[in-house]
Amino acid sequence: MTVRKILYTTAFAAALTAGAAPAIASETAPFVTAKEVRTEISESMDAIAKYTAQERKQAVAEAEAAMNKLDAEIDRRGQALRENWAEMSESARETAQEGIEELQAARNELGERYGALKAGTADAWEDLKSDFTQAWNSFSETWKSADKDAGS
Image (cartoon, rainbow, N blue to C red):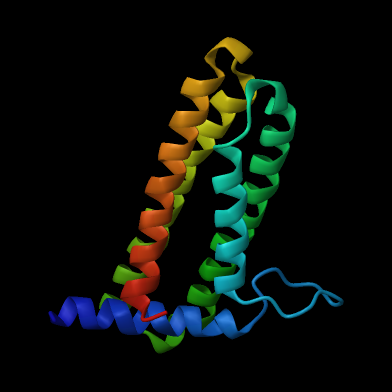
């Protein structure tokens, strides 16, 4: 394992250690782990692939809810990184920030596919749904890689 990889893993793990905090925080919300959030979002995204053109409104609503949860999880990870910033070396900061940026870039691509899914016609539903599913799969792989690198 390279020094850069070790530093990245250590930095990202430190940032995610704040994952002991609820993924979606509120005074009355039960404790929710990042893994639970990931599972819930994954189930929603997988379900969208099964919706028909007639169920388009329901699919779009479910996609929007899942993406809001995804945004909250990315925000939580960014906050954890900021909170641990002072304890991190310059190199660890850089590599951890790169990990967050990769998640954000993959999220932006997913957002573009969501916009097309939402605005598209019923005639194009299958193609739009396929594009959205591919973007989700790409995001999911980026997420898995980030978690693996962080030791989660």
